[in-house]
Length: 351
Image (cartoon, rainbow, N blue to C red; front, side, top):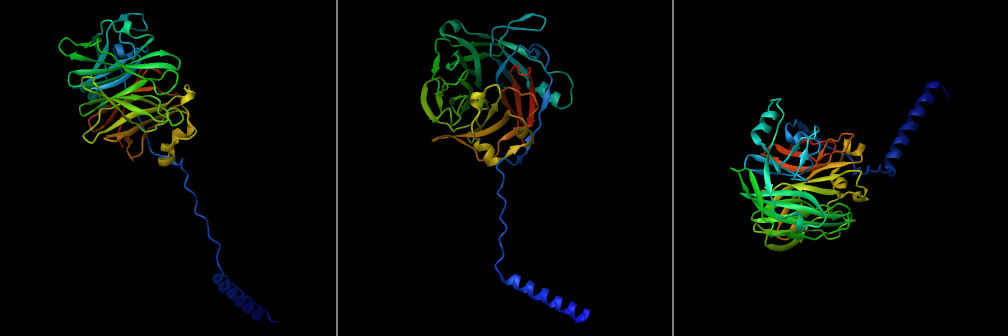
C-alpha cells in the first residue's frame, strides 16, 4: 500500500471512530459540590482614637446605647476606675458626644473623649450576692435599663434594674427597690444576660449562650417599660456568645454582637449553621476567633434570624472582645471592646 492510500485509510478510520464515540453514551462529569465554608466578604473596621478617662485600659466596657446625641458607654464596674498613674476617677456611665465621633470619622485627628454620668444606686450591692458588675444597657426616653451579672463559675445569675437619667445634673438614679431576677438558661462559666434591646414598648433581656449544644430551647425575657414581667418568647440557637444588641427598628429588626474568643473553649460548637449557609470570611478561615454582627427580628411568635448574611469583621491575629454595639445613623455601627486587647472604639460601615 502506498503512503498516500495509507494516510487516506487512516483518516477514514479516525472519522468513523469519532462518529461511533458520539453515538455511545458519554460519561457525565460530576458537578463540584459547593464548599459551605467558601470565602465570604468581610468588613474592615476604622478605629476611633480615645482620649480622657475612657482611654485607660482599666475601663472594661459592657455595652453601648444612645441617649439623644450622647453615646453612653457602660463599664462593667461603674464605681471606680484608675489610670496608669493610679489617679482615682470616680464616675459612672461615660457619655461621648456624637458630633465628636462624626468629626473624627470626617478627618479630625483629635481623640474622642467622654465625661461621666454619676450613677446613684443606693444599697444595690447589698442586695446582690456575688456581684460581678453591669453587663448590658438600653435606653427609652429618659428611662435607662441595666442588666447585672452575679455569681461564681457556672452558677451565674442575672438581674434587671431601671432608672432615670437627669441630663442637667449628669446623673443616673437607679430604682434599687425593684430588682428583677433573670434566671440562668445554661451552666456556662461567667455567662448571664449580656444584651438588652427595646422593641416598641417592651424591654427584652437576651442570654449570652444560645448555642444548640448548650441551650436547647433559648428564650428572651420580656418586660414592660415599667419592668412588669410579660413572660418569655423563643430565641433562635445562635452559636458562640451574644454580647450586646441595638434597639429594634420599625420592622422589629435589630443587630447583635456575636463573638467567640478562643479563651472560652466551652462555647466552641461542632458546626456553625451561619457559616455553613453564608460562607466564612478569609480571616475567619485563618484565625480561630469569631467576630460578627447578626441580624434578628422580633415577631409575635418569637425572635427569628433574618435571612441575610452576618456582617463578618476582618480579624487581626489578636482576638478582640467586642462588648458594645450601637448604630451610627444609616452609615453603619459603632463597636467597643472591654479591656481585651485594650479599650477600643471602632466604626464598621454597613455593606
